[in-house]
Image 1 (cartoon, protein in one colour):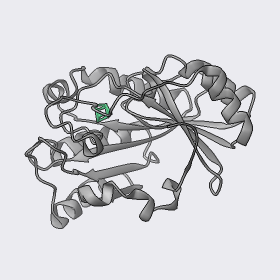
Image 2 (image 1 turned 120 degrees about the horizontal axis):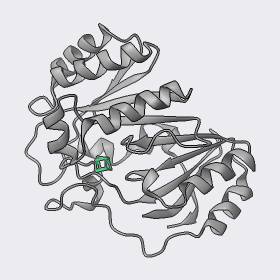
Image 3 (image 1 turned 180 degrees about the horizontal axis):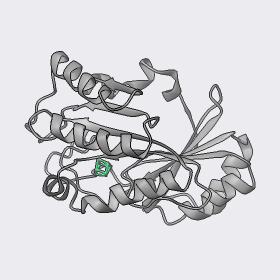
Image 4 (image 1 turned 135 degrees about the vertical axis):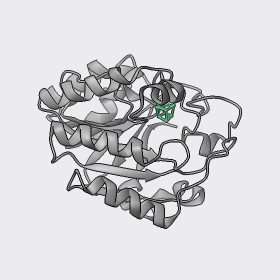
Length: 247
Ligand code: SF4
């Protein structure tokens, strides 16, 4: 598992290193949207033909000198180069460093300023069923990251008949006890190939928002169709990026 692509958004002054690979096996993984890999559990993006070397990653970042360096892709902390690249981004570029999306299985990390953690469930058994990993690993890591002073955000995919209101409520109560200023995002489930779960409807999303706002002030949501999720750059110019290394 390693980085295969670097993208750059000059308007918002951030570069993103994209990893391939994940250590969880969520059945509804949104990476199936592009790959269409209905039968395989978990992360199912096609394997890149080539990975970038550390030297290539550093030279690429030096060519644009971004103010922010983000790490994405499956689970970015599974990339063997992540610690070296975090140190480089912080000490050589003076950049803000952030995991744009992570399952939280390896937090906190040296030279990391913040992370957006995608929680999967509050219930212990459900967490194990979805991810194949114990819940405590993620919740304890999140707490440690908050205590270490990282700027943290959280999200959860809302699937009414699988990850429902009780799951959302358990999580936001946990977050509110840690720090009520933590931003929380509810992602309405985006149907992926091979899964029978349905999207929440607008009323269910509203109900979820109201439930979470009982505990946290900074709650927002997204409610995208599969087609909309495949064309994010049309909705948000933060997704309008240039590929500056890899494919
Ligand atoms: S943690 Fe994220 S990338 Fe990994 S399998 Fe689950 S949904 Fe997919």
